[in-house]
Image 1 (cartoon, rainbow, N blue to C red):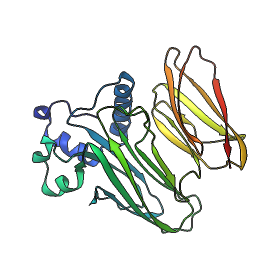
Image 2 (cartoon, rainbow, N blue to C red; image 1 turned 60 degrees about the vertical axis):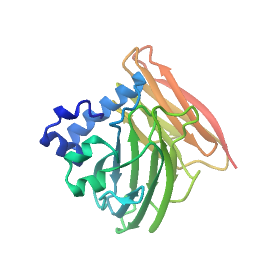
Image 3 (cartoon, rainbow, N blue to C red; image 1 turned 90 degrees about the vertical axis):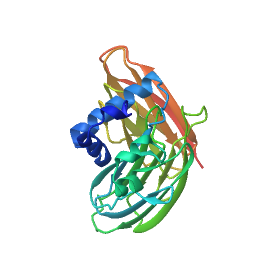
Image 4 (cartoon, rainbow, N blue to C red; image 1 turned 180 degrees about the vertical axis):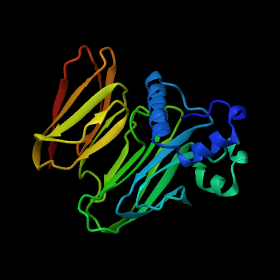
Length: 265
């Protein structure tokens, strides 16, 4: 969500943006963000990134450019992060200004410390950072096996995604240990199938799913998708071989599919 006019921003709306809003507000914002990305709108000086943390069963600490943004873990948390030099900063409380106005154009850093606090094997941790105009998250981390650890990465913020843009994707096992599929289009449903095993379906709004059942040698990934005729379905796929961006026009109501192979050494 971009802030269009600072003068129109009421105190209530401003506080809601800092906290991330409720589930309905977040869903609407995600749709609006995707719409802007599809239209190719440039980032303004009032740019914002959405930090989403899913940390049931985990204790988390997230630092962006060395600043603790207030994520604790144990639940689903959302934060809105703004440019450090945004004019909106003057309207925020000192505490909010410190934790939320932390981004800058160019290279930024993110550091995540995690500790698993439950024995539930179904618990998982996901941390993602998304921004207007980008076809996939700037950063995406998933963990479900390591008892504790620390991840430190850098990402770049620019007016438009660079031609060689590649999301920073990592699991708690390290780089190149899983496959990430991100859908950035609206009015679309997508289910990834890796080596015959279906992953989580992403439907109606942008979202990501991780698959880790690849094998040494040749692997096959199939994207099954459907949606509103005329809509262009857009996907980003990250495998151990690299990143692919796909755009497929939906021509009818029937489910379509796109498949490709990759090799893991």
